[in-house]
Length: 442
Image (cartoon, rainbow, N blue to C red; front, side, top):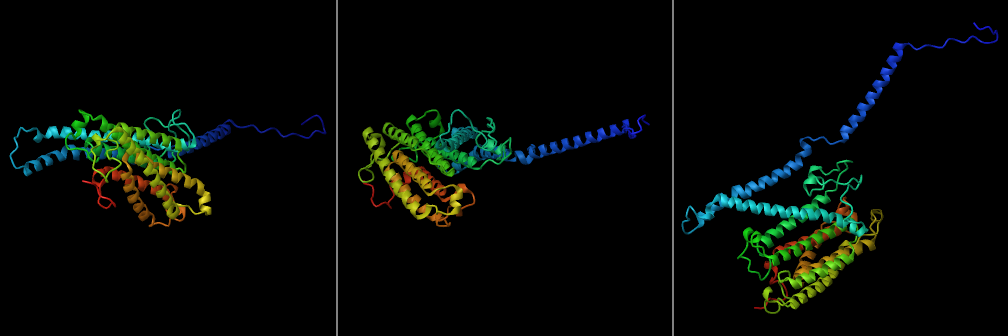
């Protein structure tokens, strides 16, 4: 008790037992471990683990390449030799090199690697085209900064940025934030790679078998292409491949609802005219054909080739403007609805991009291929596009598909590019078709 009678008696302070304090501290540590385990579980759930279904797309691509090599270089040569012997009118010597299976397998392997190299080259250019199509219309640089994730802004490594295989290895998702990467990048890489590979087979290894007026049978094949390169033909293939790469780039810009600048396209058109003037294989048709006599491209003077390219450019710009105007007014003009306003596509901006991209594509094609090709492609592509768009309610921009990138204008540009590429692959066969209102002279 206290000596002061007025001071109340204070109860003694409770003392913690050592065992009780140890138990409470263990409970706190257990709670911390539980929270840490939950956090680790969340991280493990978000982080992709390398299991079979993760690497399956990459393994499938590699297996497909190996299967293609086996069928082309191992299975087909014996069948080809057997057919050759069965259809021959005389006996082959057993020591003839044409009957050597190892030689044919080696030749086929070289051809297979040749095609794969051009595909990979085109896919790499297609990956770069994706960057140019989205950054150049916005005024962003394409040199100082590499590819990066559009969500977390993380730069992509060299392995992740590998064309086709990088997208398949990541399973279409960013390695850091795990958000999905648009399949548009894969589609454009595969499209440009396929274009380069087909041009390498048909035009380069085939010694220009698709070009009018060219004697292609002597000197075709991979041996003549690799060991005896024809530099004028290589220049023509580079020019034609760049034309279709630019077409895919314009499609990519239109997917992003952007208009590609006109100045680079004008500079590219001037370079095409110079190429057609200096290289006789680039523009093998004369501007007077098919009205007058057929000219061999080797006998056309440089000023005639320049005139051919200029006439083709002017015809391409005129036909392209008419083509774009008719399709725009009849099918492709977006309606002014709330949906279009929400999508951020004003009528004027969308029309400017459509006219710029379409007219530029026709003008560049006319500079390289001539007015004859522009006329045929415009006529065929118009019918294909009208037939395709008639199957959908295209009066509203968002009616074609829920995916914004698949609106009618993008579909029309893709069909136009496909028609132009098919025409180029069969240029020799369709250069002088009889359905035209005029016939070639004798």
